[in-house]
Structures are given as structure tokens and as C-alpha cells.
Amino acid sequence: MNICDLLARAAVAACFLIAELAVPVSARAQPFAGNPSSGRQVATTICGSCHQVIGGKGRDGPPSFVDIASMPSTTALSLKVFLRSNHKEMPDLIISAADTDDLIAYILSLKEQFAPIRQ
Image 1 (tube, one colour):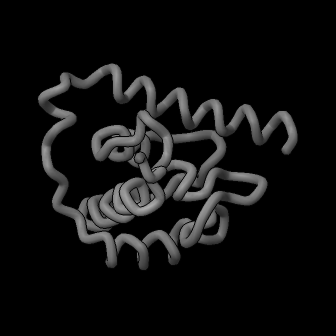
Image 2: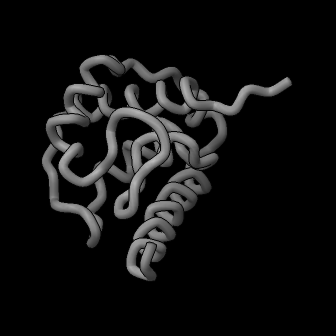
């Protein structure tokens, strides 16, 4: 992994952290209505050329969706803010509100699916 990859991952983490800190706790606890199955299809179609969308930990380059889901700062709101913002490392994508909700639901489902088992 080179310095550019590390900086890109740090930028993603910083965006999630800023979004998380800017929102009241009550807003973070709101349920999310997207469809994870549809979100997986959207992710494969739109994001799969750069990100590892399906499966475990990522390869070199942009973080995998599991890596993104595993970040402590990843919430529905932080993902929505991130997906609605421009980023130097990503193409400017225009994703419909419904597809955005589905994409977020898919990423959050990975957080639950790949969460470490606590004993």
C-alpha cells in the first residue's frame, strides 16, 4: 500500500468522523429504510469497478465495503453525507435518493454480518 492509498483512506475516515460529530445522538438512532438486496445490486453496478463490494476485507486501493462498514464512525447518516459530497478520490456520481438509501442499507448490513463475535 502506498502513501496515496493511506491518505485516501484517512480522508474517507475523516469525512465519516466529521459527519458523525456534527449530528446529535437522537438523529443517529433513527431507523433506516433502504433495501440491502437492491443496494448490493447498485453497489456492484456503480461501485464495483473500484471497490470490493462483495466479500471480506479489501484489496489494495479504495477500501472495500466491509472495511467501510467496519469503521466505528459508519452510520446511515455519515454514509448519506459522504455519498452526497464531492471527493477528490472518487468520480462525481449522481445516485438517486432511493438507490442511495439501498446502498446505505447494504453497507450497514455488512457491518452486522462481519461484526466480530463477542464472547
